[in-house]
Length: 181
Image (tube, rainbow, N blue to C red; front, top):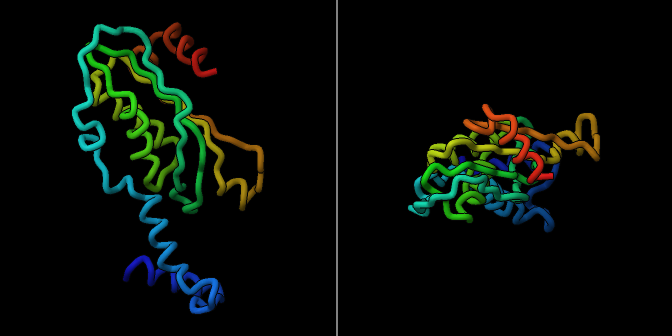
């Protein structure tokens, strides 16, 4: 059964008339929106990076801050919205700037939990760059907590993953954390 037919069935199960004027095209629009929101399933790391890895003597932190992200929680299929901060310590190679944001986007555009998203981004950057360390911090607001359940409007969740030098060296971790404040 197509996504469109499933959305029609959902509307009917909610007691709505999918043929009424305001809903007549909703199943098709909802299906198109869901395919867009989950387009990360159609992407892979090699396509995203597309060879944008460059030789560099840089050994200091490379940080891309405030990368907007939009994802759907895998438990309720409701949005969580936030920002990611991604840093790495190059070990001879640097990644094209936009590729860091594209990696975040690829994994965010899948049904997710924030904890796994943070780990997937960190491990992807590590595997692509061979960096001496990778750090990822994500802060997001979850509609499943804000619109339903406990309905706490000002809550946010922060997750972090530290690999290599960011995990093993407290001063490197502290420098990263000070840079994202």
